[in-house]
Amino acid sequence: MNDIKQFTKKELKGLVKEKNLLEFNRDISDIHTKKMVESVIECGILRLPVIGDISSFDQNKKYVIIDGQHLCNAIVKLPKGIYEDSVPCIVKVYKNKRDVISDISKLNNTQKTWNDENYLDAWFKFGKDNVEHFTNYSYLWNAYNHSYDGLPCGFLVDLFATSKDSFAEEQVRLDDDFTSALDDLVKISGNKKPSKKRF
Image 1 (cartoon, rainbow, N blue to C red):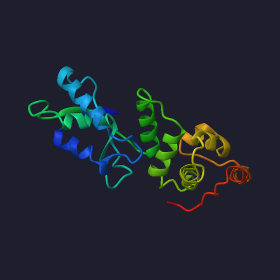
Image 2: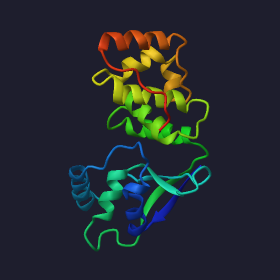
Image 3: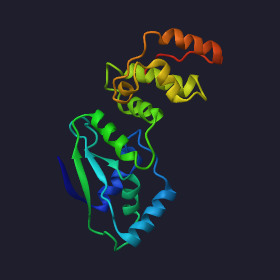
Image 4: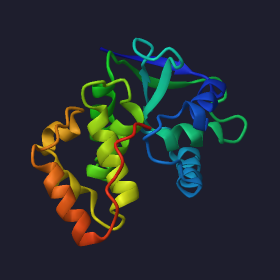
């Protein structure tokens, strides 16, 4: 169940600090923030930021921005006298990381659809506690970012993962033939085989 909670500018300022942003969410753009400031001054706040309460599984953070990083950043940068006291935000309580990533991918699809690279980055950076599958995400992330420069992420996922759905839902399983396919790819590309070390 979602609630509406009032957040002060000071609280929002804390949430938009880099250390408090989710590791995999898109970077905050100064240009987009400036446009949002102008929009809020002219039209007001037309949609509410979505804040996630992740305290049930994260000991270091209570709240994170699920949707509306630029809007929150714009609110913080508003001139004095505009939304001085507090701003209403939608607050959703999360029980696990899978639901956080699922909501962020859905909410961000209105601006730009999430692709395989977004999911790989999310599960690699946010899913280290997933003992059963993290090694597979680590392996694919390492392959994509260090060994196969230039190859589309989706190609590696299609080549190695058993299904796109399980890949996006934190349950990636590598195909039984992935080692031989990887060896063939290494020979063709001239790149070195990715290490299996955990990050």
